[in-house]
Image 1 (cartoon, rainbow, N blue to C red):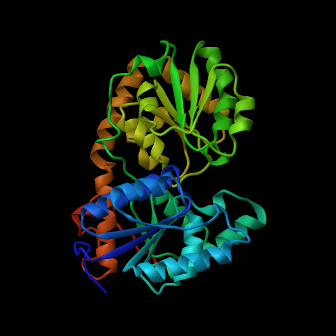
Image 2: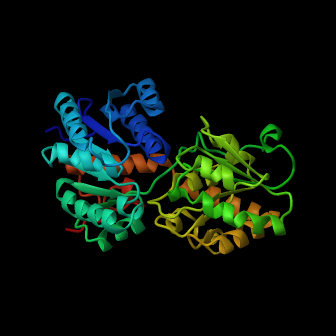
Image 3: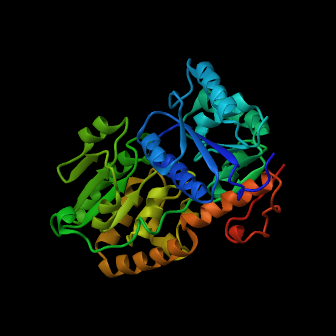
Length: 388
C-alpha cells in the first residue's frame, strides 16, 4: 500500500450518485485539488454533465449506470461497480451520497480503505418502514468504512442518534473563492429595482421550495413588488410551477448560478434536511445575505452574528416570511450581514481548506501521516473526531 498522498502513483476512486447538485460540486472540487496534487483520480459516476466536466479536468472517468434510489437494479449496480474497482485498483475509495455508499460498500466490503460521505442521511428523506430499513443499513454498513465523513458536527450527531457506530471525521464543506466572489449587480440579471429573492437548489421536497412559496404571499403583503426566482430543476418542477404566483419565476437548470447570486438582494434556502448545504456558502461568498432553515449544518455554515436574523425553523412559512420581509425592508442591515458573511466564508469556508483536510485524512488512513486530531494544520478548523 502506498503511504502518501504526495505520491503521484496514489490511486483514489471517487464513487458518486447523483451526478448533479451539491454532491457533484464537492466531487468536482476534490478531484481538481487531488489532480493538482499529483494523484491518479478515477471517478465512477452516471453519464452526466459531471462526467464531462471531470474528463476536462483530466480525471479517469468510469461511467457507472445507477439509479438515484435503491431498487431492483441494485444487484447489477453493485456488480458493475465491483468491476470498476477491480480495474482501477485504487488505494482508497471515497463514496459520496447514500446510494453510492450502499452500492460501494457492498462492492468493496472493506477490502480497500473506504471513506463514506453521506452528504445528508438517507433516512431523513423517508419515513416509516423505509426510514427504519435505511437506518438499519447505515448501522450495518458503517463497519465497511474506515471513516464516515460528515460535513457538519450536526450531521454526525444525527448519525449517532440513529445508532450508527461510525469511525467519524467532520470536514465541513467549502466553496471556491475564485469562482464565487462579489461583483456589481448586472442590470440584465436584476431586471427592475424591485427586491429580488433567489433560491438555488434542486426542485425537490428536501430543498423546501414549497415552504417558500407558502410564505411568499405574506412577504408580498409587506414588500409589494418583490420578486422570487427558483433556480434549478428537479422532480417537483411542475408542482411548484402550479403553486407559483406571477411574481415567481422558475429558471430551470442553469449552467452557472453565480449571476443569480450576484443579482439577488437576498438568497433563501428553506431546506427540510441537509448535511451542510453549499448554496448558502456560495451566496455568502458572492457577498449576499442569506436566510436558511435550522437543519443540520446550517448554524455551522453561518457566522454567529447572522444566526438571530438569518436562521428560521424548518417547515414554518410564517417565520420564513417574517425573516425574508424584515431583511428586504432593511437594506443597511442586509449590507452589514453580507459583509460579515463574506469575511467569514473567505476565512473558514474556503474549499482549499476542505481539500487539505481530506488529504490529511487520506494520509492518516494510508499510514503516511499523523492522526489529524489537532496535529495537522489542515485540521485547525476541521478536527477529526473518532468514535468507536
